[in-house]
Image 1 (cartoon, helix red, strand yellow):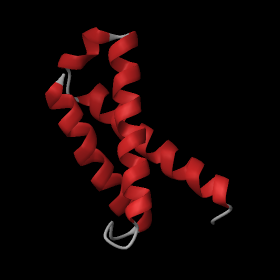
Image 2 (image 1 turned 90 degrees about the horizontal axis):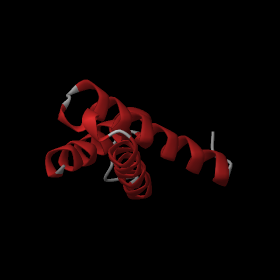
Image 3 (image 1 turned 60 degrees about the horizontal axis):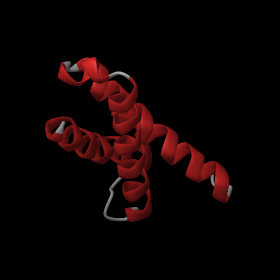
Image 4 (image 1 turned 60 degrees about the vertical axis):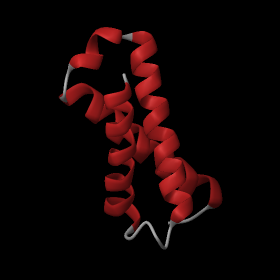
Length: 80
């Protein structure tokens, strides 16, 4: 479990870099993507713990959680 949480945090850095540019200028997006990716991994672990040993599924879920968190925040504040 700790290895996929570290992977989720690193995926959050990657997702923020892809979506919003440098994370130094956008720390709020980095924080939101970290929360979103960790939430996605925890939901995956609580629902389907057999996928924790894989490589593709946990990384895809953490990236999806980060993207959803950033898009939801943009939608909430009315940004483009």
